Length: 179
Image (cartoon, rainbow, N blue to C red):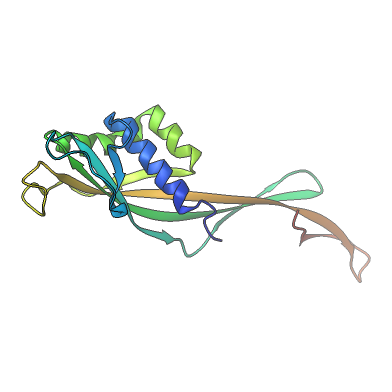
């Protein structure tokens, strides 16, 4: 079972999540690998970048069966994938923002936002202070990796068919009928 959400959907989810928590205006939350314009270094505006590191599908689906009525059985298949995301915050209070992104998983607004994409924020790495690395001209820079669970489900109904066996007894058999 594959994930039906596209990378556009994941990028939109991440953009909305970071924008909601940081309060940064449009254009100040940037997909890291797009090599697009950054806020002016002269003004030293605070901004954040993000990049999807990996998406790993699970090896199996969870299956739950329940009696729908006397003639039908409902089966639900759920697949969970893990998505890792790197977030960099260029701000003096970047460490607090990195922590606020993790703590946002407990807020109703963020939980509802992630639910739209069938996702849940599972955890994060330790916050790393990268202020003196790279070509950031010694701007304050903090980074953490976040782990998301992405869930996809499919339901189908099985029709119970009764069969007459060789001994003259009726047996209930489950035969799969995909709807």
